[in-house]
Image (cartoon, rainbow, N blue to C red):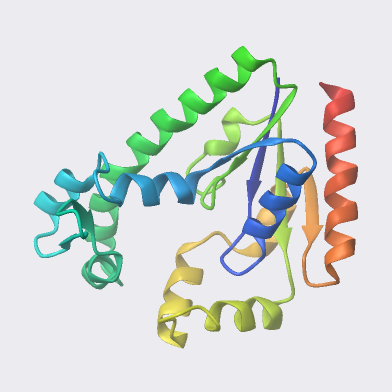
Length: 202
């Protein structure tokens, strides 16, 4: 089974690329979705995060605890120690979910799978991959996409981008690069070509 790592800096179009892989019949593990699940109502990380960061728990209509993500963001924004504490809780849980995804995919006989992980290269996750796909876009396109997000500010954008590996370095370490700053058709054709290559290799 070929394991393809999909990554890219914030605002580069990684989620759209992941959907394109799915449209071509490739199973995708979504690290962001897994983290949301862990922090959502009944999530396995809720109790530990609540203990580490008092005041970040809310309740849904059924009375289930979940992590108030804006409140949590306020606790870790520009605080490297707090951020590492949070990552120390979430990352091991997400890695277990990733291993389960790979095991299930192998039992199903999947030939190619994609691991959609924002910090793939920063955390050394590329060691588990047979190839790495990096999505990229011009800086002005990235900035426009980021600032359209609810609650985003220039300060927060700069903080997030500053913690990530530079786009140029990600592209240098990639086996495939997908340009998302052009038209959607261009990105889809590029991803279709990647799927064809890796399926042939598998």
